[in-house]
Length: 74
Image (cartoon, rainbow, N blue to C red; front, top):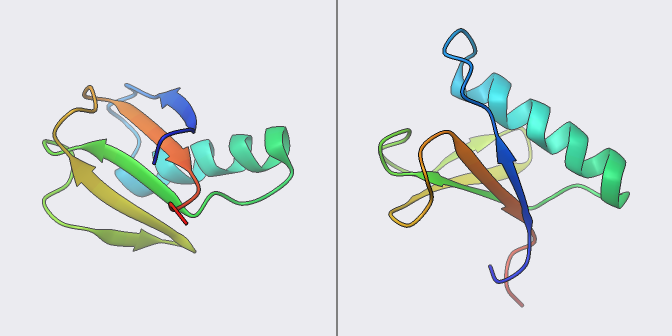
């Protein structure tokens, strides 16, 4: 993914799913469509998972507590 929205959520009381859902809702309101994927730091998630319709993938170059949302590459 080359273009997307970066979201920060460092609230330790929320689960990863809650954080992703909040970021997805903001993305949907701002851009008028659902993101297809969300990239997170490897320390937050061991392997890819689905949160609703969004694919959440761990990657090494995302800062902890950050969520990079956008569309899958064509």
